[in-house]
Amino acid sequence: MPTPNDSTVSNYLFDNANEDAERQVELLAAILDVHTELVLYDLDIDTRWQCLDLGSGGGSVPTMLGRPLFAVEHVVAIDQDPRYIEQREGLEIRQADVMTADLGENVFDLIHARLLFMHLPEREQLLRRAIAALKPGGLIVVSDWDCTHLDEMLLTGDDELREAFLAFQHGLITLGERRGMDPAWARRIPAVFAAQGLTDLGALVYNKLWYGGQPGMQLHACNSRQLQEPLLDAGVTKRQLDVLRAGMEDPQVIGYTYPMYTAVGRRPR
Ligand SMILES: C[S@@+](CC[C@H](N)C(=O)[O-])C[C@H]1O[C@@H](n2cnc3c(N)ncnc32)[C@H](O)[C@@H]1O
Image (tube, rainbow, N blue to C red; front, side, top):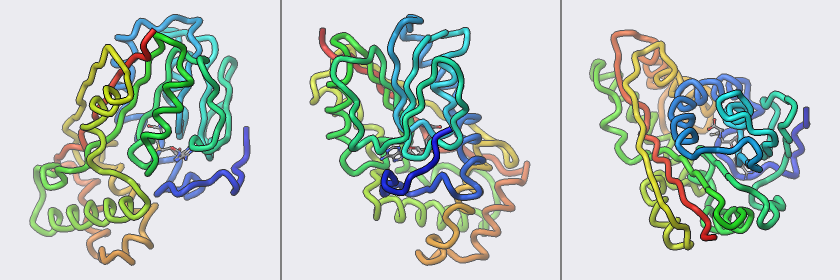
């Protein structure tokens, strides 16, 4: 298992070294893998494809690609802190900053990235390098959350919970934006794909209703624990964080996560 190396750690809002980070990547897998599997299934992936996952987090997607449904023989997973990715045969784990890592040229049949590009200020530059790393005809899949409709997420709960939920969400987005995150990028991905010359564009939007106590609600509480200090500094109160965390465990509370926008494009042959 690679060990984190400070020289590769970038400006990313969260920190995989945080005590709640492993739970975070588990929750992301529980919320999103069903969607990612559907998108990947539609791509007719061949077992001999060279596949690359960027910003792999807990590694659920590179692991999925190795399972019998896809049975991809060789997958590369890159993360600046890959401590939660379980090693297995056929999986090559690289610890690197995606902005400086050598991705190669004409190497991959499929490149996938989920919840990475939205965090990177120079996301279009990374996209250009990722496209160059694809073989002609290769596919890129980019998934990110659209975080622009925060007031439409929580559907029940009393006034105090709704106010705490929104205060937390706005605080989180403010912290992200300070580090170059773009909460509205997800909906633009196909347009950026087109501008960078990709063809055969496709896109799918995924969301689901969750109850308090389920992963889609627990993620907010988990994120609030990881970023407690900066959130407090940004003006969210401890009372609001306590109310949020209790609400996210209350089975009477229902709501959506952020909608996930996934775009697919092909490097021209
Ligand atoms: C929100 S997590 C998403 C993890 C996984 N893709 C998923 O959807 O479950 C973002 C991941 O990207 C990684 N990351 C962020 N910036 C990075 C960079 N510049 N280079 C490499 N990895 C990065 C983080 O370490 C983290 O594991």
